[in-house]
Image 1 (cartoon, rainbow, N blue to C red):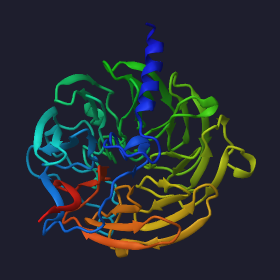
Image 2 (cartoon, one colour):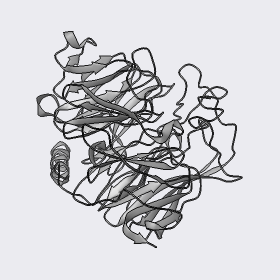
Image 3 (cartoon, one colour):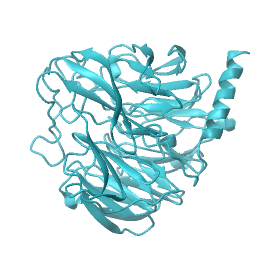
Length: 460
């Protein structure tokens, strides 16, 4: 059978296997779950717990090393990556509100590291297996607030793909057997124009995305930037498109029905954002200008693509039609595809989230803002965390509640809806930089040294 037909069939089967909106799923297979939506449905989740006392704590598993990657869940397995320094413990600094906040200098040489993938039983937290995927001195340095394991894995049935940036992309089966490895070269991700080996290297963070039989990787850095589709079976390039881009830390998003009903890959960017045909890699639409040093992932809901970034002159939040084509005019009054835009309201680290009629964004300083998704009308703007903690992990929604993880370990739980209501705050007891995962009513938080499973009625 023609390989193109096989790919088309695989995509169809993949889309059919995805949960429909409102349909519960036990799997949380990539960064922010299915389609990066960040929404879990069909199961009740709790809003109060106590890690120290064990109240509503199903389990707590120690994970060595330093990593900001999120857990992912498939079936009864939970996967998480980490990087372990051979001599000494990796240090974190430049956290929000700290003395060195905003510092951009790379961490000095930390020596040799080992790069790991852990597989845990999602119900008990016990380690099923762990596999060292690489060992050596990192090819690039990291930001003092970052880690060498910032990209979240992506998984489908019996395959999991892990990106360690310059150290390679790895594919394993769910029992830890390595299927393939791809070397994408040295990805020199850092401050534009100042990220050589003696300058500001900040480390790779874009997570891989699996759709059908392809793995999509966004590699924007201070060298030749590109986006590529890799074959899930053996890792070879199906297509690769070069990008005139500076460094970004954004994860791409698959939009299953773009212009003409064709699937496309949506990329946030520094110099430009846009959509690429999933089959060929041909750029479908492009919009120049926005915020620099972008981190948030694009999200798609109800026919709109939501993008944001917080650096640069305009720092916009934008809503763009999925049917967009061609070069878009940045002026909403002149562009039929640009539905609405708010300048100087963009957010830096977190990916926004949409549920129903409402769009929610949380700034790194803890300001949560709710908009009417279709019109951009602002409904409320409130501060969580008391202004004492930063927010690097992105929010998730489950059971009518938004979970916002603060860097200090304080998790704020907010009621969804057009009016602000803080339900509770809960202390994880450790620094928390990662976005949580949710599966069957259990919330899995990745803290500085552990994965913690929070569920109703569990623990002491």
